[in-house]
Image (cartoon, rainbow, N blue to C red; front, side, top):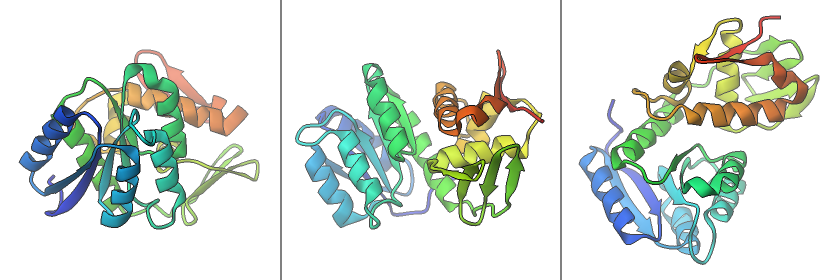
Length: 231
């Protein structure tokens, strides 16, 4: 499935060779126009001015760190709708978690394949075009309000990112059934091929933490994936 022509991607990355590599990869994929910034402050300004369809954001940037750029973009009503794909080094796990907590849509650890970045970008953009499921669901103390797009536990609203919301909704809709990691990558993230199942593990961990004791209902089925306990 190709992305609609003319989708603008902002790459915020201070390594010129990485910018060039990603620019070539996106240009080879039909339907992308690439703009770039080499520091956080410029990236923030260009995101506000250009309103791209997607921001590919490195976390280690001069002038302003990527996490701060993410925080500002996601707190501004004019830019919070722009999806963010983070680029991280393996040593930046804390920043990666903070970025996901702030609302980043996905992350890729360096070194990475340019094709992987393009595939993830396409998946993120497809998710944004998917109609919202307005169905309301209840699983024990967890209530999912599909109309207002929020989750509550014992009546208290829990703030989830868009991906966490969709992941929880999928598990609740399929409660009692084991969901393999690659199936979740396909159905929640929109990936058409197996890329990195650690993405699922990271989001499940954060989702459990946000749900508190109610998160214990999400069971790990060793060697397969996850299941929401049907009780």
